[in-house]
Image (tube, rainbow, N blue to C red):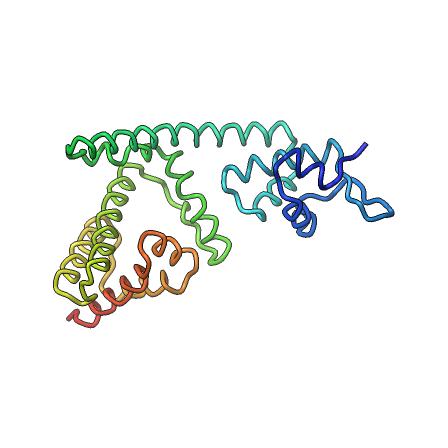
Length: 249
């Protein structure tokens, strides 16, 4: 006995449109297609759909899910890997929820929160790998660049994350306040950020930082990250970085 697309959609809360798309890209074929054109799904297909949904909960892109499921790994091994990844995410989310609750409490009470507590939730190599996973996969697929090729050093990444938040929050506030992109305050803010990057082994000059800012504008993924924080931020950052590069000796 097989289940129709509509029945599977009702059972799994996956839309009919999504099931049709999974079929189209070869991610999930129905077990049978009747003479009347009805797609029917059996136990094997439902098991594969369950694995797909576990990976989707982990934010894996569809092409990567397809590659993983076609790697020859047996179902129990796949499920064990998914359990490990979900538990790692659960621990990270618990830490982040705790951090959020502490931030709400300190804000309500008007008490400053120390920076160590502000960034609890990114304390281990595994958590950082999980946090960087989506960006890493995107860069590998589009630019053949492996963000995770080198060793992950959580303490260093924590410091960089704090600085990135400080820097981007400052740029977003300048933009919201109507401060011109080449204002002296913005240039000083950029210089402080560049000094930090160079102290932490990035070895980047004004022209290279401007090129990076242009990349953020041109690339959909990175532009979206900045625009989600503040509309126009990617373009504002790019103009400011280019102004700084033009003024550099």
